[in-house]
Amino acid sequence: MSEALFTAIKSGDLDALNALLADDPDLASASEDGVSAVLVSLYHRQDGARDALLAAGDARAAFYAAISRKTRAFNRARGRSGFLTADALAVAVALEPSIVTRSERRHVAVETRGELTRGATVVDWDGRLGLPPNARIVLDVDVARFEALVARALGADPGAV
Image 1 (tube, rainbow, N blue to C red):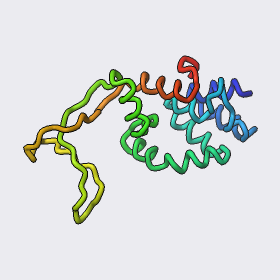
Image 2: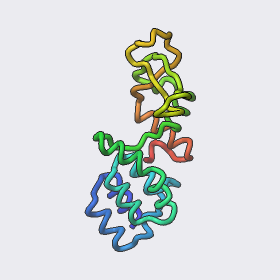
Image 3: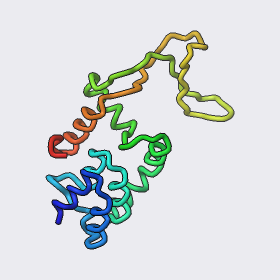
Image 4: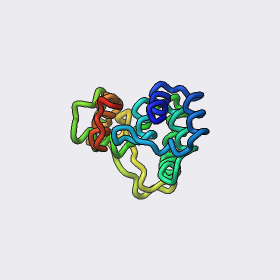
């Protein structure tokens, strides 16, 4: 039954996935080659499958759902699938700078004295301050290579997911 679960996840077959989870909710915690069902859904950009697994999952799924809720909502509102986290992406770019496909140099500062905000990162996108660029802003990356780096870091075979 686990093979059917992962086939449904990878293909995005929500009817099959929901039927399997209704029959055996513990399948939400299944792993394939050491990779959790939720992680497989992320690798294959199957947001519907991920949501179904989180709804049926155990305490780990509930924890993941809670910590990723805002990011998933942000991406969904902008028509983005998948789940890129800034911290993991920053580490990946530091380790493999060649995954960056588009970036820009801009002046960046952290607001420390503002009335409306404190600690906010402020980017001078139009050069209005006349200050020299001091940061490289990553705008696009090779997502497949990023996902392979994450898979390797988590001990998964990137070719298997």
